Structures are given as C-alpha cells and as structure tokens.
Length: 420
Image (cartoon, rainbow, N blue to C red; front, top):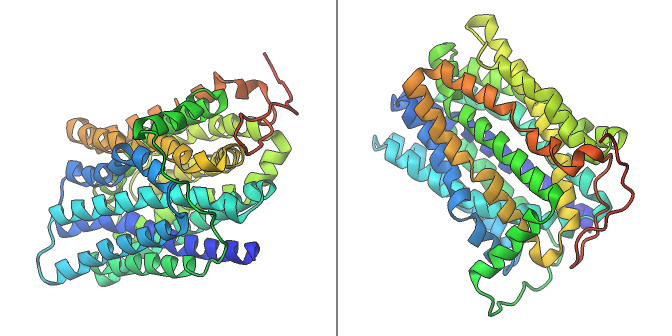
C-alpha cells in the first residue's frame, strides 16, 4: 500500500513539476514578447512569486501541522491551475496586463508555499526513515527530468502557439497532479489539536530547533546564500538570453533544458555519491566543486557561445541536487512528526526568504549596470554559498549524525572526524 501510494505521489510530483517548469519560461516570455516589459518589470515577477515564502511561510507551517496534509496539496494544485488558466482567457479578450501577471505570480507563490511545506512533510508518512534518501532521490530525478523537458517544450509552445496559450500546459500539469494525489490511500493520523500556545511561541519553537542545531544552521545559511544569487540570476536570465544573447524562444528553451541535464545526472547518482564519500562530506564537497562553474554564466555569448551558459548551469544544478538530496533527507529523518511542518516552513522561510530579495536585486543591478553585469554579480556571489558549511562541524565529519525521529534531539554516533 505504501509503495503504491508513493508511486502516485511521484507521478503527481512529475505532473506538477512539469507545469512549474513550463511556467518558469513562459511567464517571463509573456512579459517580454507580449507586454514588452523592462528588465526590472520582468525581475519583479520573480520577486512577487517568491515573496510568499518571506511573508507567510512561518504561520503556514503552524497551520499545516494542524490539518491533514494531503488535502492541502490538492487544494494548492487547484489554486495554481486556476491562476494559470486565467492568462490565456485574458489574452484572448485583449485584457492581459502586467498587473494580472503579478497577481498570477502572487497567487501561485502563496499556493506553492503551502504545497511545498505539506509535500516535504508527507513523505516521511509514506516511506520508512531508511527509504528517505532513495525517495528524495527519486523526487529530485522527477524534478530534474521536468527541468530538462519543461523549458524546451515551453519554448516550443511559445514559438508555435504564442506565449499566453502555453499557460494551458501549466494548468493541465497542476490538475493532473491534484488527480494523482487524490489516489493516495495512506491514512493520515488525526491532526494535532489546537492548543493554547500562541502562534509566536509555536513558530519560535521550530526556529530554535533549527538554530540550536549546528548542522541545520549551516544548511540554512548555505541554502539562503545560494538561493539569493540563484534567484537573482533567474530574475534576469530571460532578458539576458533573449535581448543580450538574442535567442529565440525555442533556442532559449533548448539552452535551459540542456542546463537541467546536470540536475538529472545529480539526482541519479546522489545516493551513490553520498555512500561513497559520506552524507556530511558530500554537502560541502559538491558545492565547493561545482560552484565555480557559475562563472561561465556571464561569459556566454551569441550563437554557439550560448553553450557556456548551459554548461555553467548544468554543473551548478548537479551540485545543487546532490546537496539537496542529502540535506532534505537528514531534516526529514531527524525531526519529530509534530514539528515537521513547522520545521520545513521555518527552513523555507530562512532559505527561500532570500529569493524575493534576489529578484529585486537582479532588477536593480540590471537597470543600473546592465544585464550582463547583473549576471556577473550572480556568479561571483554564488561562490560564497559553501562558506557556512566549511565553517561548521560538517567539515570534520564523514557522515551526518544518526537520525532518530522522536521528541528528542538527534543522537550523535557513528561519526568519522576528518581534518582539524
């Protein structure tokens, strides 16, 4: 039963990720080609979509811990499908504006906050703790596969059908995800009863759970820095590829799809690499080894030289996926269930809360110094991400602390100190 339900969970994730990856390319292309938006207006779309993690992630985590998580996933998918479906309708009637795109980005971002918190909190109920690394590896493979296929298909749809109509594929992806999630039959335990503890106290409990753990604290800082500069790149990459490198929508999709091959490769080998070098060591080692490839982003040029952008993104994506499989599996296995939603929400707040700031920073940098200069800032800043890991106990460990999900802290055993 559990394996059957996990299969539906993965299929739903594939459909939802497909829609999300098409959105990633189609939303800014609508702004650029249909509404002729400036670089700052395009980057503001990214800032608006990710702002929900900064604004509501913490209370959303408290709420998710008080309800059954599967219905949250389904309702979030339906909300995202509805928002995406409004774009072709508005375009067909000649009413599409940047204001509507910002509204769609905001609604999608809010729904994604609840979906992501509940999604990470559902997996430990479908799999045993010793299956989490493999399960997260499979989900990362699904996400990376969508990153390979989605942008290429999205660019092709924009070129063949026009940017607004490509949103139909986004909406369908989210609806299929909702239908797959409804097939899951694993019984969820009754949600935690509301207590007299105030909201700020419950939020503080989850934040302190992260901040008092040196491993979680280092993971949060590294992820926050990486997301800041990765989102800064995301906010300007469409303008960079279209207006600086002069790529057509189909070629742009091909570049982004090729970039995602690195993430797919990372998902396929993440478990093997972690076993070979250690789950602790792999996190700082892979980020340190792949981070310098970010410098290839601003070195890309027109024509065949656009391949440098794809190569840099592919290497960075490989490292990010291997890192994510290791750190997410650790978080899920060592956190008590009653705190899982709030812990995931607090982590999302800390590591994704930098994303709207990155979106705004990308827009300001592109407006002030030019798009290529903004990409240089993204690349150089990305090199800072491994520093918190290197300054943490992880640098002296081969494997992470043995995780025991319960009410107490993780038990430290089986560690292999390395270095000073």
